[in-house]
Length: 77
Image 1 (cartoon, helix red, strand yellow):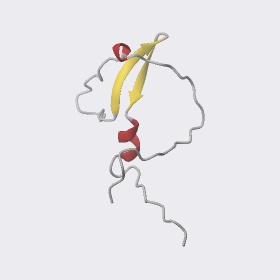
Image 2 (tube, rainbow, N blue to C red; image 1 turned 90 degrees about the vertical axis):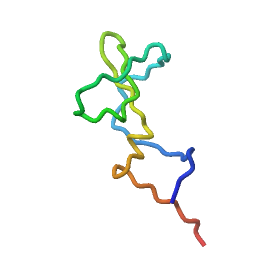
Image 3 (cartoon, one colour; image 1 turned 90 degrees about the horizontal axis):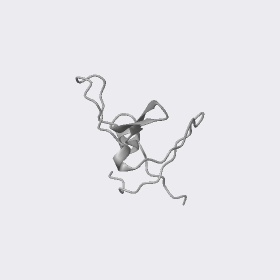
């Protein structure tokens, strides 16, 4: 079954270390690591406060085949 492109979902995390706003100009392309590890789920990298941050493509992280399977909820009768 196909899901609409705007399916709402959430994630529970243990902690949030930092929240930042980035402009598109601050993003650097994902480096080529030579095929390992798989970087298809990385949108880009950014250097912030002297550290490198990785920007993840959450659609790919959560919806990639085999990682998470969503089942449509059924309305109670």
